[in-house]
Image (cartoon, rainbow over all chains, first blue to last red; front, side, top):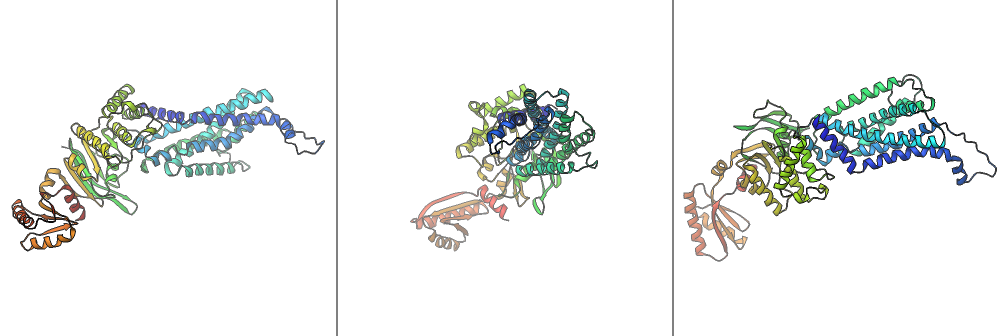
Length: 258
Length: 305
């Protein structure tokens, strides 16, 4: 536990010194704020852009407050996720290639401690960025469109955080078996796209799919309901635990020297 | 008493056999040099000892520990390529290394400052490692290896990347270290091995071909020699011929002729002949030298066999 904490502190210091703590939350905040702003100002934007025939009347129904935040969550789920993948792709593969991992693992440190320190640090960064993004979305929605129940906001954040946490776990797990950071990011995004595509299938067959969490978080915001959330939450948590276990084994089996 | 016992160590990477059935002991308090040409398997052996590579077969046993038990807290390891976190300062890195070996923060801080002082890096200790020179990184690497006062220090080619001044400094440091620690280091620089080590292990193609103390090795392989250096390689043949007719057989490499003898009595007789010939035709002779075969000769002999 104590050595885990040393490694966790190292991870936090690293993401601080490499400015990840600055720009990841910043990207999420911008993504969060942009959606309510653009929906509110859409008529003015269209007018300024011009190109509409004289006298044309376009009625854009203003989005409900919940839908505005759900839309920004959707942005975070694509662009934000991409940023997380790019930031975390080198977490293990990069340290292995550089040889810095060897110098850590030659100390009496357990493989799971090494892995969990990274997992916790990246999740903390993700959580902070997501909360900031949601806060920005909520602030502008409340200001420009209308109020959103705090309970829906919190619940959707938690559901969405679990999904992003699973993505980070997949990213770290790929890092233990692949040498190239770019391949790690690509493989992770491939898995995410596949899961999301499957989750979009109609019917109950995909009720367990953790990629459903993204849609369920949005649904909670637009309707206030969270039916069907239990099953994907269970699979997501189980997958996170299983992936961390498998990644620890992979770290032991695959030499950590360049 | 052996500090480490290695038995039947084997490591294969797919079809490639990097280490084939290697057994040796490292004696407590000794400095052991692992010698061998590039690609002989030196780094692989050291990485297995450091716990970074799992062996395909065989055992590594530390004194006082069960076979195969985690011995990482007993060792310090300096890899060939010292890769440190460039965004950390030297002090932070060594302190973290100390904490990872189980020291609490104040103790790790104290030990880190002590080592950094010993290696003359105080002035740079609060700067980022990213801006360090190669020699400074090597010294921080040594600090992190020594932070837990290891019983065995494993150094993989510790001087290979350094300039002559840095190399001299590090060798002097290792000499100091020798008195308090057991050291195992790999090198292909023979004079370094000769200067530092008590025991010599020579590896060739993944197998140990010589395992001996330096003194025994000297006694076994050291032979008296006479060397004659000429101005011109072209005349070497006639020199060898003249002396061969008197029963002194030699060989030449470039303009240097060398006669190797089995006993010092034979050497005395042979040297007398060489001196006599040189005295009779001194023109073209640059130097004549009596001596002993060096570790390099033994090494070349051992890896060629």
